[in-house]
Length: 265
Image (cartoon, rainbow, N blue to C red; front, side, top):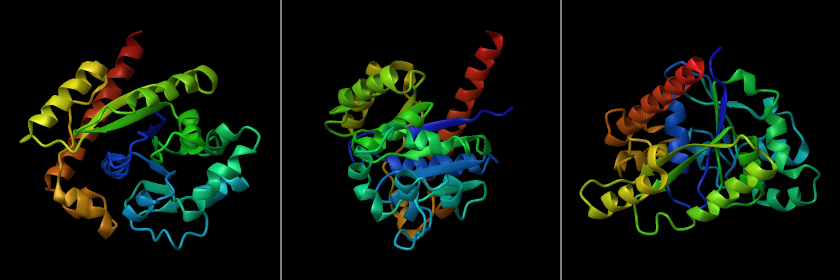
């Protein structure tokens, strides 16, 4: 039986490439005939619009699932990519943090909602908001692992201890099996000493958890969301698209390696 995993893409810093990574890694995996679901848990709804959906014309969203108990199947939308579906976000999600506070089992709303559909997908990616509030807690409680994008710029490691502490607390009280999927270097510019310095610092801190593939700064990668397309559908030959194709290869080979080690055990 093929692997089923829920992966939260998380970093409370904004602008580190979370949504870009969710959209493009998910698309690359979908083109390999993996069945993928994206949960857009960010009120900005950039994953929703980046896959061609009008975020102002969403009738049922992840807000309805979390706050009103709507079955998640009723909020799933098809994207323009075969094998790739999304539970969209909406502007209503801005108020969800406040509305969830008084609810029983507020941290497990997403986990409970996913229980009915998790067997239908090889991978479920959760695009987390740039904060460590209740929405992110829901993502970490529902996830098997966390993928952490880190941009190769000044203060890249700033706030990371806070995220790691949150992961530790979630393991203690809500999700003991939560693992770190990997750390992804984004906005890498080979011409800059700074990028190399940050990459070395991150690899020293996280060791083998850092993906070998780094995502470069790339104009086509930045442009593609405004056309409602993943980079590999917008310009497959661009450096950004090629980097995500390479990341998908590394992601899958890592999975196969772990599965082989488990079989031997």
